Image (cartoon, rainbow over all chains, first blue to last red; front, side):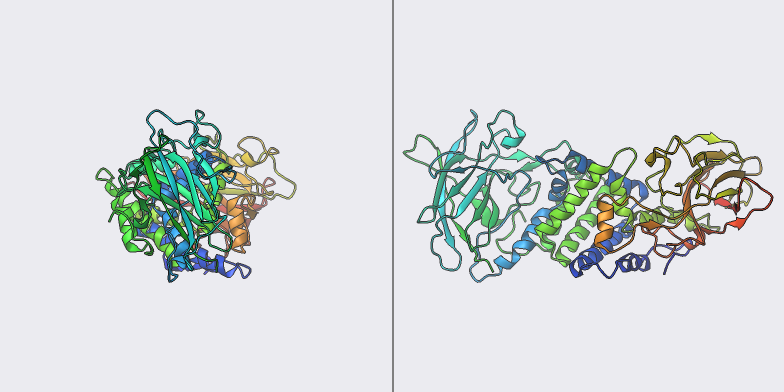
Length: 291
Length: 291
């Protein structure tokens, strides 16, 4: 089929034509991905009788997302997040490890605020340097072990980051010093790490762009439950990207980016005899071996 | 369901959760569109086991599209075009009119180079002011009639635009004067319009952005068959956006944006006794009544 009959509805024949246009040098993976993408995009348009006006509104939103994005903000990612796509692909990617006999700690989405250049800090020190008046400090500590052997993993890296009580990460906020509420900790011989941080608080995702507009159109709020981000890495093991959620937080049931899993809620307990922290959080991580 | 079990694959239950998050103030149309969009996006990711890395590569391409877009270029639109989406939604949008007893002229996609502010020109004049050496001039003329009555439509507007032989529209090319190869013509009492233009030539779509990258990844070429864009409007009638294709052109079978339909190919015939034009193109348009 080269051209389409006058007046015919563009159905499966048209979709097949677009798929078949891929040349012989397309990689097998690209062919698989694009075949499914073209099919689903076409089926979506046909199912809802998508009009040119509606499609152009969608294009304008996607262009707007790109125009808002820079090295501190990824609005395209955020648009995907509010329809659950990042959580879904995170789950798909992590599925192999989850199938292991002794499942490692659950994963969760990276989010747009991780920085590659966070400083290494000493265990027992703090990541909060601009503690706001409404903040409550917690002491977080735990052990990193192997999912296979149960043994502690020394020299593992625990990369942690969290928002302040105003809902902003340090790179979004001129009132926080560089790398406030962010740092990397290296586990000791017993696989242990520890640091002072804030007991996290719920906050809204950026609401001034297309992700916010989409939430408004879907009559949804923009809040995320209180959480701390972690990436845990140890040589020879699969690195773990996750978020842990305060089990007493609001929005656990309706996280605006759908990242909450049962295995990731944690309990803050009152901490006694430490003038530096009101709350104590023990959080142990198990890592799967690299395959 | 609030949170998801540790280790479970995010299946239909997760998708239903994302869909159900829409609040009561969501409009019925928005709910229909977003329900289908979320379902298809999730099904796509699950079907191909989309990884985080692959998804982030897709996000980067969409952000890049937005960053390349401005008032002269719509790269998000172009990305949709190369997977046939604009042709499909154009067809869906026009379907109502096509269902009429006496079908009007077929539609085709607007494309990214139309301008709202094209000048009105006199019938019988030209739209080519910077005619290149390799160009061949044609005289295009025809009649606009009603699909219902067959009668001529006076005062209809024929808005026409085309690329030069270098493949560039005037707004892409500093060597063309403003509104070269572009103009609006108003039909006379007999519904007739006429002007001199170029016999169109195939050209590549912009290949320096994500649409070009996607074409490369799909091992496809970037060419469009020779065509002229038209929007025809008449009071009380549905406006027609279309493209007409030279039936002798290359790429009719494999238009990079899938806009060719049989009803839209036209025949240029040798023109005799006119020193201004080598070719003659008669093109008549019928318009459907507004419903």
